[in-house]
Length: 343
Image 1 (spheres, helix red, strand yellow):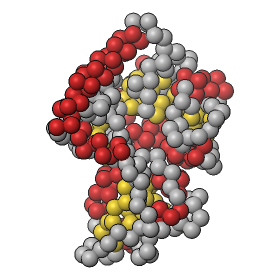
Image 2 (tube, one colour):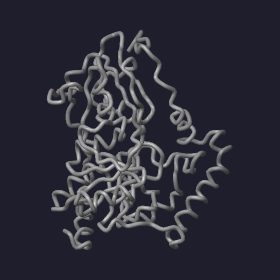
Image 3 (cartoon, helix red, strand yellow):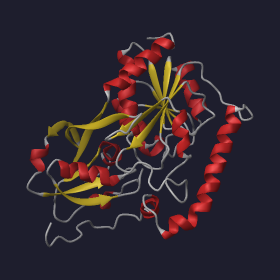
Image 4 (cartoon, helix red, strand yellow):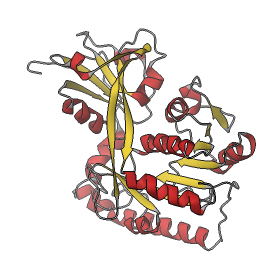
């Protein structure tokens, strides 16, 4: 917007991860300097996995099938929308799914936490509350995913469990692994932390059961799109609007997710003029961070809305999206369920 100045009353907190990420997705002096640490990290990851595979370290199975939805990289890749789609898909197949999640950012002292749509995101984390609202199945948050999975299976009557993230959480035994890939950023410079974004070496992908790519897939991957549903009023979600309502004006786009740029570009793809306000993933907002002098509309992700709807004096809209994976993924899952004897 020509002549625009910064309009928020406070400066967004410094996102240290975002500062480092610029070195993860290209070759820089720093990424080369950190490469030996990345090799060591990869080595430790391979050794740790080998110890679990050889039963030196022990995995625990909750007694019902477990599907892991995770990724190799740090940051957002579309896992949460896929988990929601998967839970709904499993219900359509006559199953009783439950979701176990770490509850990252939750301040509760007593775990596991059975999450409801009314749960406090400060206590259990923002993603668990979003999952509880959208997936239509029991959700349990617990840093110990084995304990959380047991609650789902033994207390809440679930006959299949979906783990939101947890590809590297080998204590929880699994029956199926789905790796989600960011089709735009892929694997960055291909190095492991801290030199690159990888949590494990790329060879790990050869061991998963399916790869789902948000965006354009490559050979051996299934594609997935995020379909825009509509905008909802933050303080009255039953009030909706289409993108046309916000065209012809500059809007404040707020995103505290793993990859804020994806949200900003999505809004621009809808024809909107965007003033960007990126925040760290899982950021706990303060009212003053969402007050803008020009009175422009505020648009945010559904995940951010979970935390912002409780802030006094904050008005705005959130954009609801739905995962649309390749139908071949559904066919694959139906075959797998039959092999499990439950579909």
